[in-house]
Image (cartoon, rainbow, N blue to C red):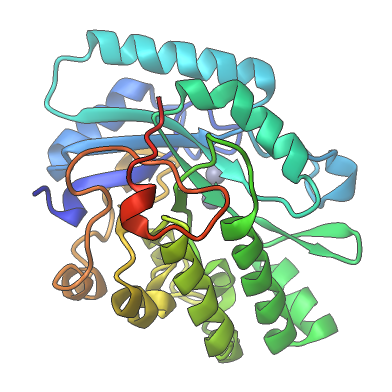
Length: 302
Ligand SMILES: [Zn+2]
Ligand SMILES: [Zn+2]
């Protein structure tokens, strides 16, 4: 079985509008080879489902529909010509945006057949009819000022629960990206980890619906405010419910690939967590129902 820390299953690409590098795709593969990574899961940001006027974005945060076409074309072409040792998986990171579930399902119907894998992530929370962008610390701090840390955390995990149970059709991604994103300011607000009952409910639902959860090392890039791995606070529940786990550095430049996969928290977690799809197969999460993981495992993405 391939060790958890040999697969980076959350990698962005030169197509990402907020990439941190203009390095070509080949450099991502060279970086993976150097790090001893045997599989790269490209998960570029799929089209944003809502009008930007409802958000705090000033420019498009994700690929447009036209850019997704180009992304798939070039990624599949790259794989045709690449002869190195790294397995390349091609997919998208899809936003779960409460209130735009139908649009998201339509987008998945369109792109799902070309997605070999995918992440479903919450980057924005619906607050009073608008979307609060959790990618910026000042937004989180302002929201805590308005509603308090416990309430914000409660809203976050309720949204995560909706992510798990909402029917987004047959191509709904089967892994949850950075599942404790408020940890971006976690050092300032320890209350974020006090919604224990809800946190456990979310993890238990993830298990029930056949999801894997991600340990995402991007949090370690903000040592003053975060200094933890996204997903880390859920580890006791992931252990309790035996939820499969994947690792991602969320690299937006080649040098970040596989970063901190040797972190003590990960090495310790590897002793008891089951790496995602250890048998190498890809599985779709159940969109509805209460099947156990083993049954969900039979739903394969085509
Ligand atoms: Zn990004
Ligand atoms: Zn993300």
